Structures are given as C-alpha cells and as structure tokens.
Image (cartoon, rainbow, N blue to C red):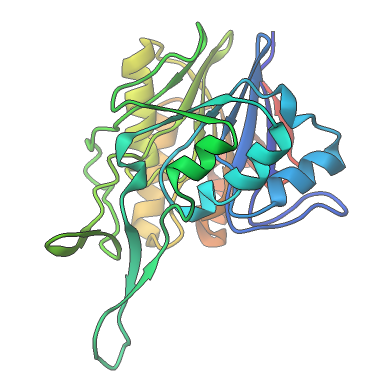
Length: 282
C-alpha cells in the first residue's frame, strides 16, 4: 500500500492552467484515509482540485499546521465546496494574533502586518468546520498522527524574531507552539509532511521519530522555512537530514530557491520540487 501526496497549493505550479498562490496545501492519502494538511491562502486549492479532477468532498479530515493566513485563508472556499461537517485539527494557539514585523534600514519605527487567521471560528464552524484542539500529538487513525508541539532540540534551528504575536503587553516573538506537521507510518518508514516547520524541520523529524517509535524516515515533503536562512544553516540542515537517514526530499513554499538548490545538490535524484500539481507515491 502506497502513500499518495497531492500538492494542491504552493508558490509555484508544475502543470498548465494550475494556479500558483503563496501558501501550501497537501492532500495525504493512505489506506483509504484522506487528510488535507492546510488550505492555502485563497481559492487555489479549490480551483486546482477542479483542474486535477480531485473531489474535495472525499476528504476525511483537515489538519492546520499553524495559524498563518497563507495556510488557513483558503478554508472558506474549501469548506463551502465540501458542503459537510468535517473535523479540523489544530493547536489551541492557532487563533493567536499573529504579525510580521519590519523596520526600515535607515531607522524609524517598526511596522507590523497582520498575518494570522482572518476568519472567525464561528464563521468557519457555520460552514462545517468542527475544530478539535490539542497541544499533544493526535492519532487521526492507525497510520496518521499530528506532531503536536515540537520540542526545540537541534542547536542550529531557531525561530525568526520578526514573526510576532500581539498580546496585552505588546508584540512578542511568536514561539509557534501551534506549529505542527503530519506524520504517516508507511510500509517503507515515516513520511513527514511539513507545513512551514517554523520550529525547525529537523526538530520536527526528530519528534516524529519519538512519537511513532519508528527510526526510518522514507520521505520529508513540504515547507522547511529556510527562506531567510544563511548558507551555514542550510548546510547544517542538509547534513542533519542525511544523518537522520531521510531517503526522499520534496521541498515547497517557504524553503526558498537558494536553499532548495543546495538541498537538490545534496540529495541528487532523491530530491524534487514539490509544487502545486505534484503527485508523488511512496
């Protein structure tokens, strides 16, 4: 039995007519289960699913990797298309008031831009979302589990300080406790599907091994959040991926082209660009 991953939303596309959108959404299928990780930013998921002949009504569950709009903004058209009640798994902090910050190079005040979930819970619930919150890993079935909160253990992985949460005391660095991934226990080993990996791709993989008790990592697919990483951090990530025994690597969204190119050089034929329209089976 093979794991099938279909990327419905990404910054780039690999097929004629498909829509590119800043965001991510990956449909994971295994042993009859259909779980959608994230919903992109707008209507790319729905439109690309139509072009690819995918029935979104057949999705069993939705998992949100974290509370940024580029992974949640597409929930409204997605739920409208599904037209049914569906469980949506997320960390309770997913509704935090999330912002990005920037400061002009010549000085001046720091500006903040809202990048959190724009819809209200009750609005999405009226469209069929049945939110299920948990800080711990959640087994969706016998073979699929969320990571829950990811421990920060890799010494070279850190959270960007320009991503913030607005609190009563002002803007503070977002700890991204809501950052999680989807793990699939396949016959060939673990398939780890990343949203953005704000708490680190390596940290996430290590946690996946701990949760499942499975040491072999067959594939890692999705966003690795190396977009702003320097060469040293990227090289350390590549080395750690090799040390962890990752056999296949497909990167998306927030990885960035420089990091993707370096990882492609490291993994050779075991690397692929995971853009919208990509269908892979493991």
